Length: 454
Image 1 (cartoon, rainbow, N blue to C red):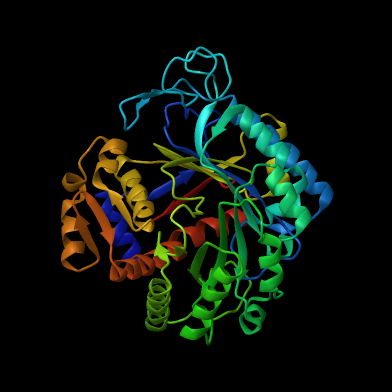
Image 2 (cartoon, helix red, strand yellow):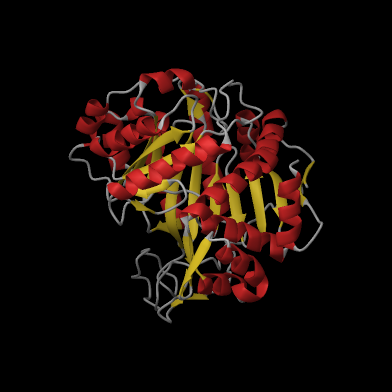
């Protein structure tokens, strides 16, 4: 475990207590009082396994995938029926948001079409994302999944799906549109054969992709690109960025390559100075092209184009390896597909490990993901925690401002380019110290008893 990560954890949480995950998992989830809930669904199946990919995945098996989706729909029913009454939260305009998201007692004619006093019993959800794996392998059943989710949740912020480049074809895109999908993220990684070969992927035709996307109704077309690959020069990654936006993208997620211990690939990691040089080149090139930076790794050509399944204060995760984040807890489902199916068939949640946050731990988690989005309002911290940011972390933000990592504009805190790089540098330690260890364990044991991250 990195000493830097441990010291940062102790300082920011004001405690020597480590992060302790146990198998003491909830069999019921009370999420009724949450105002902006995100939803995530994991489809782990792939046509082939990429050695560099750290996510929960397995080779496509049509029969197993059908059984998995049957279990997935059952898990949605289980969780959808668990919502407690919760407490209503005040909206910014002073109205009251009830469990269906209505702002007044509409007597059954509200947006969810139900008969409850606030317009129905569906829970408002800000977004829904399908990840994997290759979720489009289940394109002909995504409509069933969104329909089941729609019985319990009023999804208002759109539906996103991750796509392999091979899935950008007329049949698949038709099925996605029929299922209500309005945002797609295509895992290009690189348009250049030399880097695709390093990653063990097959290349794609950008003109063919542009042709398939033309005339579609998607609000966001995001493309994933990887930088910090061996031998990668500034011109290489900037050329990939240009190709993405010329091929139908209005959003790009440009991630650094991370060498996870448990992945079988043998791609050497790039040094910090080289990585910083590439990231600076990406940012400068994006600015020159008129792109807006809307998170640490993402850039868009349109204000409303966005794609992120993680930047939510609270969310419910469905499927193997899916994470659920609630105000006082974080839980992760088993990574094992067969164990997931068996557990759900018993009418039980497939939770594997859970952490009960201390208040400070939850604050650190909240700040980590808010800074990923490059900026946030201090008042958002007050709304979520009922405390002032300056009182809890005034010294840290004052120091970061003096070092040139953040700047303050009224009540809004904004990361600078230097701050964004050092965020990445710290996040790399966090990933290798915490996520790498957690996912490595989860891949070995379906339901481990305990995990301590110091």
